Length: 381
Image 1 (cartoon, helix red, strand yellow):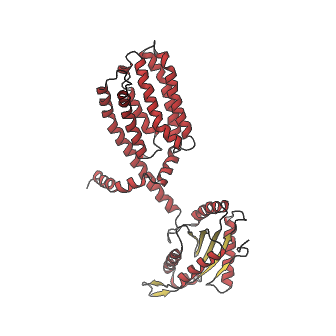
Image 2 (cartoon, rainbow, N blue to C red):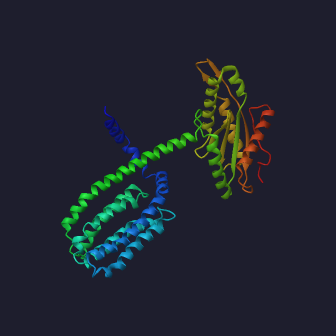
Image 3 (cartoon, rainbow, N blue to C red):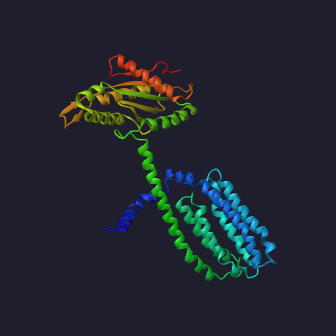
């Protein structure tokens, strides 16, 4: 099978996930972030281009061109208003309103300009094509469906003006020939670009996931945890909500590696993680902190609730042996768990929370292992 056929089949298979993803919140947020600066720059360039068309007006009709300078300035002002509304957030409601109404207002004034200039309707027919040249670039940061609606809108708006009685001698047969010639390729290019960006977005998410995931246990790694947990803890603190952290250490794990080797040790690690995750909720964040140590961030959880979760995790690990057919062994593991809780009256400090939970783990080890210990000061304030 040729490479082109393989790529075509892959594109067809990707159609459903593509259509599902391109209107997802994460995708749209990434697209807005990636193309925000481009959108602002493109709008500024467009405003300059609109002002430069004053030269075209004087070339066509030097007598009447001064009468439409203010309209060209108005067109540029509309584009600049769109740019200003998009400056901080390209998806802001006003930015989207201007993305729809702005081009239509420019079209309406353009139709009027063609009526003022001598033979403007004849010479300016090709000017409508510029709308289809510029608009795909100006709406790159917007959802695909939104961009399509805008393109269709600017295609049908001039004929609607004609039906409303605003006619300036435009030859509509030629207009529709122009639009019919350009709108199909523009839509296809827009769709192709969206597919290419979706491909980049998908691979980028995969790379980000791999960079933040522990390769053996498939939970978050230490680097990702420190970044994500810091942000979550800060948000919880600002909202005055309790957050707890569990520091989990697999008891006597070094002995397993020394007696049976690292292959079996890896199996025990993945088994224990599976048991731990079985207890956790969707909002809880678990990560491999290092070696046989794991940390769990529990949002909206006070110290007593965290103790309950920790006891459930300890029981889940102890109650199910890790079966290794290759070694013909059933290994029962236990864990020691340290609990530390961030109170609303404390500053958000993840390092302090980890250190407190870590000290509690060592207390649990000295107490005989296979137990849960809360750090001092983790009780109610």
